[in-house]
Length: 346
Ligand SMILES: Nc1ncnc2c1ncn2[C@@H]1O[C@H](COP(=O)(O)OP(=O)(O)OP(=O)(O)O)[C@@H](O)[C@H]1O
Image 1 (cartoon, protein in one colour):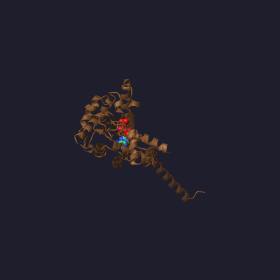
Image 2 (image 1 turned 180 degrees about the horizontal axis):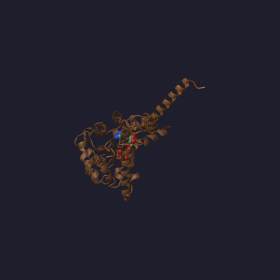
Image 3 (image 1 turned 90 degrees about the horizontal axis):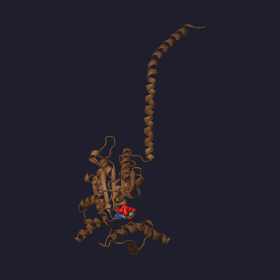
Image 4 (image 1 turned 120 degrees about the horizontal axis):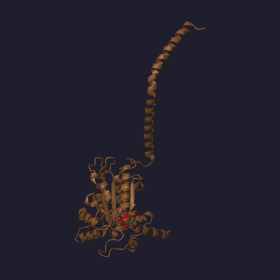
C-alpha cells in the first residue's frame, strides 16, 4: 500500500528525472566532442610518451642521439691524428661555429678534404661522425657514398644526379642534422654534384625543410701531389711543416678542384662558393708513419723496439721519388703489415 511519504518521494523522483533529462541534452551533445578530445589528447600523450621512451633507447634526430661532442673530437684528433696540424686547427672551429645554437649562417657546412692516399681523410671524417652522433659513422643520419662503387659510370650521370638530389633532400627532411660524406670524389663523373648546388646554396633554403644544419664532406686525392710539391717547396725555403698555414694551400686547392678531373671539376658548387673550407691533408713523413705503426702494435699489445718499428716502416712504405721524404701511401698499409707480423708471432 502506498503511503503519503511514498507519493512525495515519487514527486521528487519525477522532478529529478526532469532535471536530469534537461541536463542530459547538453551531455548528449557534448559527449562525442568530449570523447573525441579525450581520445586525441590520449593519443598525443601516448605518442609523446612512446617517442620519449623510444628515443631513450633508439636513435632519433634529437640531442641525445646527436650530441655534437666537440671536446671528444678535439681530444681524439689530438691523440690519434699525426702530422695534420691544419686539419686540427681548422676543422674543429668550423664545426663548432656550425653547431652553435645561434649560428647566423644560412647554409649547410661544406668541407672538401684533399690529400694523397693514407693521410687520414676518411679517418677524420669517421671521427667527426663519431663525435657528432652517438651511433658514430653507423648512424642512420650519416650517409656515406663511395665514388668508385656508387657513381663509377660517366654514362649514368643523370641517374646519379637524380639519386644524390633525392636522397639528400629526403634525408634532410627526415633529419636536418644529417651528414653526407662523399668519398673518392675524384673517381666520380664530372657534373655529378651540380644538382646539389641548389640545395646547398644560400638561396635554396626551402620553406618546408631546414637545410642549414646539414654537413657535407667531400674526400678526394685531387691536388694531393700539388700539396706535397707546395709543402716541399715551403720546407726547402726553411719553413717548418708545423708553421705552414691554411692560406698557403687554400687557393691552390680551390683552383685544382675546379680544374682537375673528378666530381668537382667545373662544378657550379665551386663557382657559387658553396664549399666553405678546402682542407689540405699534408703528405706524411716517415716519423708520422712510425707513430701509426706504434698505434697498430699497441692494438695487438706488442711492444717492439724502436729499431724494429723503423725496420717495419722502411719495409712497408715507399717514399715519393721526387722529394724523397713523403710516404706514398701514408699510413694506409701499416695496419695490415702490423697485423700480419702479429699473426706470425702467435
Ligand atoms: N694522419 C694520420 N694519423 C694517424 N693515422 C692515420 C693518418 N692517416 C692515416 N692513418 C691511418 O691509416 C688508415 C687509412 O687512412 P685513411 O683511410 O683515412 O686515408 P685516406 O686519406 O682517406 O686515403 P684515401 O685517399 O686512399 O682514401 C686510417 O684508418 C688510420 O688508421
